[in-house]
Structure formats: structure tokens, C-alpha cells
Image (cartoon, rainbow, N blue to C red; front, side, top):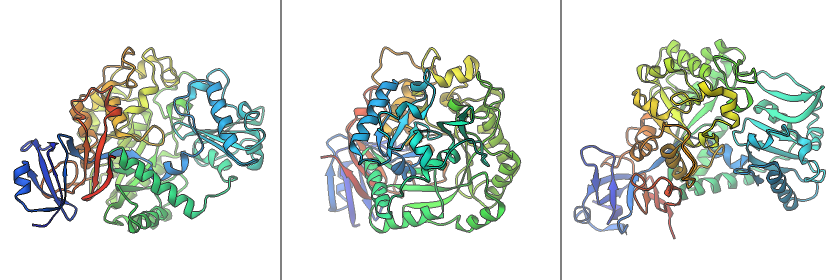
Length: 533
């Protein structure tokens, strides 16, 4: 047998009940062909490359079950505003970015947090002086809100409110825009005024982002943004050797789309390359809790949250039925409890299972107790992002908790990862990058701590934490089962050779130390796509 790659001297966590541990594995032509002891693997013959891992820990390749790898590469340009907690810090970061830009160049920033604007309100004029008259557009951490300076609004010819087909808003005061832009249609009114990147610039940003993700141990993801043009980009990345992860890529179905648009996409259900495939339709039934666009059973504390993202929920249900009955897996963004119910109802009404995997709901930030059992009973995946709740304060003083009030932000209803698992639901874990950082070590830590790492004196948000093994399963076996990938998620002969190698065991590692755990190797399809120095 010709062995391309042998990993020996390791501690292998296979996630297979019959052979849970081993010390070595052999890879040939992109597949795992043997798992066993060092001696058993060496007896197979000389490998093209043998790596002695010196007791490092091999786990199935980590898959991010909700990530925007292509959109995120373009959205994370400019000033990094993540983790900044005061308006003055944000202003200083934007001022520094302005100094890096040419005169008159658009000043960009990403990752702003809502709490920064609690006292001032979200207003573009707050940054007019620090950008020295240049146009500026700053996006928030959830990508559902942005703030534009007066010069940016002027260049975009935004002078007042507009109507949109989806639940979006150019926020105005006395008829004049404040600079706050809620949801993508509103943000796009300003983005269209920005100079476009060249194709070469866009490609380089995408390729660089994928390399960064590989270095953090990611071997794949469910890429939650896609069009037919995305397939062309993936083909180019793969042909050039730059597709260093394995991706499932949905089509994004927007509210204004019509049956003719859907019919154009259906024939591309089975589009694929070696490391990517289609077959998923992605919908948004609501927005986000923080801005009052998450769809709730009852209004939030500011009287908002009663509108769906799709103005006509029946149109959403027709779209879901079209794709479900064509064999697509359906995925719906739903942060609010009413949005979750609507997605569950739409899947049940469609009455069709996907050809691969299961229908799924993304985020589920708050959930009614009577809806929780439906996930297991109706075979719907709960796709969760533990890092989202790291902005939440234990005393519920944060914007998200204040919007929902104490009942809907209570244990078992707020980011209910453990409760859903215990109900029998399949729970897949991911990041939602660029909303939060893509590093899976942060995601694993957040699922176990329910608070930011290293803040050991801070109590967890609630008692919904899961253990290390459950967290790892969320990024491996559950991620594979979600999309029906029968040859991923475990380390077994005949499975695809996607593995992540850590310096120590991510299951046993102190979750506060997980973000610093070294990634030794990342292997995708039998290829070493990252190797520590």
C-alpha cells in the first residue's frame, strides 16, 4: 500500500465508540486508510512523509457549522473595533485608520459593539471630526447595522428615509438621516457609493482568509453566504490550490426573490468540486435582538421585535417548500423565539427531508420552552454560536438582555445549547465569523465557560455550559451529521483525511487556556495545509 502521510507518536481521539483512541494513522489519496498503533502503521510500509507528533493530540478536523468565509474576508477591512468598550476607544481606532488612508479615501471599520453607543445613540456625526471630512462606514459586530458619516451619506445620495422590500431602515430624526443603517438593504445604499475592489484584490483577500482559518485548526465550514458567482470563485480557488478548507455553500434566498429566481437555482443543487458542494438554501426570517429586528412572540422592552425580516411569511414558506421539495437542505436564520417557531412550522409544512443532512435553524438566541422539544421530534438541527453570548453580562445589564427582559434571557431560553442537547436535538457549533472571531478554540472555550476566557472571577451567564467532549462533537461529528457528510467527523479507515492536531487535548484542556492551545497541524483531504513553525 502506498502511504502518502503517516502521523505517529500521537494521542488520537477518534470519536468512534469502538476504537476511541490510537497512537497513529495512515493517509493515502485523501482518505484515512488505517488507524492503530505506531507499529501497525509503520508495518504498512514507508510513507511519502511521516510526522512524529511527540504526543500531540489528533482529533477529527474541526468544521465551523456557521461561518461567512468569503463575505467575511471582504467585511473585515479597516479598523478592528471588536472588544472596544467605549466611544472614545472607537473614535481613536477610527482616527488611526484615517491616518493610514489617503486623503478623501473611504475609512472603514468593523466589529463595533452596540453598548458603545448606549448613551450617545448611533450617529455618524460622532466620527465626522476624527475622519477629517472623509467618508466613513463602520459596521457592527453582527453585520446587521452600520453607521455612516455625513460625507458618506452625501456621496450615497441618502437624504431621508426609504422603503425596502425587507425589514430594513435608514434611521432618521425629523426626516434627516442620523447615519444609522439597519439591515443589509439599508447598508447597501451606502456601500454602493464606495469604490469597488478589483477581482484580483477580492481573490487575494479570500485566499488569505482561508489560510488564516487553516492556521487556527479549521478544516472546513458551512459557508453561510452564496450565489452562483460563489461557485465560480470556489472553482478558481480550488484550481489554484487555495481552497484549503472543505465547504458546504448555500444559496442565499432573499425576500424579494420570486419563483422564477428559485427555479434558476434549483438545477445547481448538485454543483460541487472536490472540496466544496452546494445543496443548501439559506433564508433569514428575522434580524437581530440588539436592534429590535429579531422576531419575538411579545415585543421587546422598547416595543420592537414584532416584524419578520420577510414582510410576507407565507412567501417565505413557499420558498422553503420549493427548495425542500427539490431536495435542498434548508437553513433559516432565526434569533427570536417567534422566528424559530416560524422556521419550524415552515419545515413541517414543506413535508420534505433534504437529500443530505437535515433542515436547520441558525442562532436560536431565545426560545420558548414549548418549542424546544420540536427540534428532536421533527429532526431539525440547532446550529448554535456560543461566542454570541459572550457580550452578555451575568446581571443582564447588556443591550441584548435588556431588550429581551429577564424572562426571555433566563436560563434554558437564552442561547440554550445544553438544554437543546439534553432534549435530544442535534446541536452543531460554529462562530458566525466575521460577527465573532473564527478561531474554533474560542468557540470550544465559550461553549464550556459561558463567559469570556481568562475572566475567572466573572460568573457564567447561566448554567447552560456543556463539557469538553460535547463541545468537540459540536465541531466534528455533529457538524458532519448536520450536512449528511458520512465520511467526516471521525477518524476511521475509509473516512476523509481531515484532521486537526493540537499540542494537547482540547477536551481535557482547561477551557480558559484553550484559546492559546497550539495548533500543530491542519490536514485537509490528506494535504497538510498548516504546519506550526
